[in-house]
Image 1 (cartoon, rainbow, N blue to C red):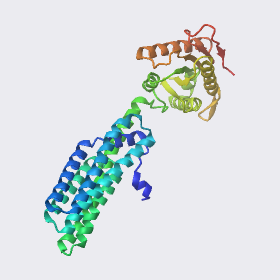
Image 2 (cartoon, rainbow, N blue to C red; image 1 turned 135 degrees about the vertical axis):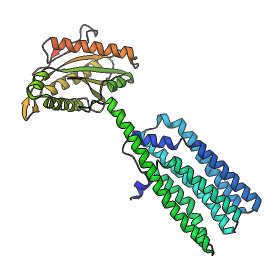
Image 3 (cartoon, rainbow, N blue to C red; image 1 turned 30 degrees about the vertical axis):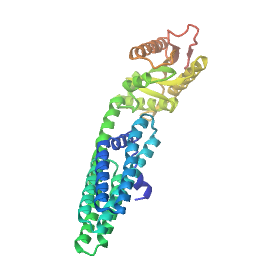
Length: 383
């Protein structure tokens, strides 16, 4: 495994990765508990034993715990505005903070074993095990964090055990290595199971917002995009003109294939700065943000012409070239604020009326919404 892959374990779906990182940062109660108990335990050992090493380690534990707790609080304030890249950075911050705390806590065990302080070793070992359990219960969703933190936590204890002349200590050091391997398997198992659940949840969410045939967003996804739109947007309703004869002639299977080809062409037309959706049957909708005034109307018209011209080009159905054509209704919103659900419904009614006016006029045409200004142009896109 490459070091970079070990360090990040990225998930290809940014949404799932974000949820995994958010889960890491819900561990405040566990982190607070282990931080307080670890600081108290280290301070108690320093006071009871009077050892300067214990005192230094207690300070290290306090500082790393404070930094770790601070990062948990800071994430909550930044989370709503984080980009996908920022999420990866915060995952690494969590891992680095956990690793630093692990080193400090591991040094406590190392010092106790080097001093031959049996009560201190017992306290330090108990704190280490508590930390490991907490890491697996929360951070197992990102296995690299568990593996790195556990390795840095247990390494000082393993080294100190191997340096002791007594055989039981050496045996204990070997057992801790085996324990790390167990943690590795457990964290990977828990991570895989949790990610599988998240992927299944996201798949169901996509199905609820995606047209099963074309893969385009469906009506619900389109309405959500419209309700969250900022500024002026162009809404274009498109209906295929001669789809039914093709569907009747070649059968529903070929008709479905034709709709899939239509979806691909509309996706190419709208690009990455807009959204194409299937509303059902042979009706599609486009939405894209545009500028205010005449520039926005010109952009909406250009997009409409591009889409309708693209659909007027021949399609291959059963290895035969077939022409269908399309009609369109166009609307550019007048307000810059996101519409309410009722206002969005009204916008769709307006653009739908414009679409069917274009179809009644003979098809292959576009028309502006009847509630646009009366001097808006209209045209014929056939040919």
